[in-house]
Length: 348
Length: 254
Image (cartoon, rainbow over all chains, first blue to last red; front, side, top):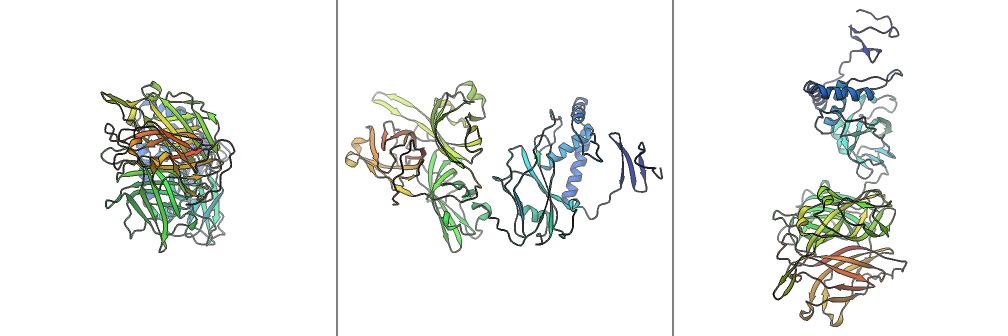
């Protein structure tokens, strides 16, 4: 087949000179053969290998399982094109849903989900992109098993109006952190360069149901990179904030002051040290003066000897030499060095 | 005040005393259940369904669990009550969850104490510091003493209280205690768990007693045998709801 009269006539299939005609769901589709524009990244290679593996595993399904995928596919829809709703085969649905699950770190599912799952669309109030910060704010929270998927492009000239083909997956599925998704590190790790002020970043987001692999509609957005942003990060201390030059005595840490109420969240796996009934944490930055003070939190022993008793802890928080120190000081209950401090605690 | 709609662990209806702000909730309740019941045995988490709360999820708070154990000897009864603190959170507007741990399944019935603050994060503002007031404790003859970390932080609708027991006159050690907590608002009434104290039969969790607070009066009648054992540091940690509209006295910082 050298030439096709017109797609309007339909009924043709085959490839010639880089043009492919095929029948999909009763429609004629013509496409040019695509060639990668550059060397494949590690992530692309991994994804292609994963797709190949998922495709192959179809053959390992029982006839009954294949029938169930076909049955589900009859009710599910593929991407719409030229105003026609595309049909999708059981095999393609199997590949699509499993590739999303694998992308999110889940295992492949052999059995088809009982029914198509309605996944909500993403809703957020702001997205801020500066060279130092890439964050979504005001995300309408969705509970597990839904996860937030973000695709973004490298920043491009502000005059570019269509850069969607440049987007790559920044996070294959994360939970929003109380309405916030700070993807700064993931962006830099994936894209490799900081966004340039004045340039434009293309963004695609959607919710992924990791239990079934179904996704919500892709939400498209663009944002012009700014040099600075008034966006205020929440005041919190995590293991990422530890001062590497000091020895801290916790194996996990999440102290969050963003409550807007008379308590903070104190969460730490205390390890104790030096035969004193406390664990010290050294942060690489100062805490805002308004939260510096004392907290009181509850804890529970969780040492290797099976102690599970309740304890209370004073949490001293102070700034010194441009850095902060938190001291989890044991007060009530029998003391054991390994103790998990958790929950809301008063601050004064 | 509101009542639970249902629960999945075979407990009776739970009556909650509450203060609900737009971004946090303080709940007080006490409920006892039998861990041998089929519903409890079948559940993975303790789930309580409640009428609409002001918040639709929360971070973790602490709920205490306690069992009662009395052993009888020729010389009398000995108390070996125990317990610990469990993680709890508001899952959605109508659901309170408490983690399920098997530690005391053989020691039922179990009592849960909600003296708990459920807060939300990323609220657009930092935590607000309260004012600590050292509790002045008055007993006849000053027989019961508390450490300097015994204090309250008083708000219009609720109070945070931390007690840390220090010592007791020997003559009073086995008698019921009664004390006046000067800075405690009169409109707080609650049964409050008192973790700590030695417990030779339960050395994983140690002791847990219960005190009662009402009209500024603290009472505590039942205490574990090893209450004053060295290093066992009995204490209380509680967010307590105030009833009615009694205004807060102006706090005096220590």
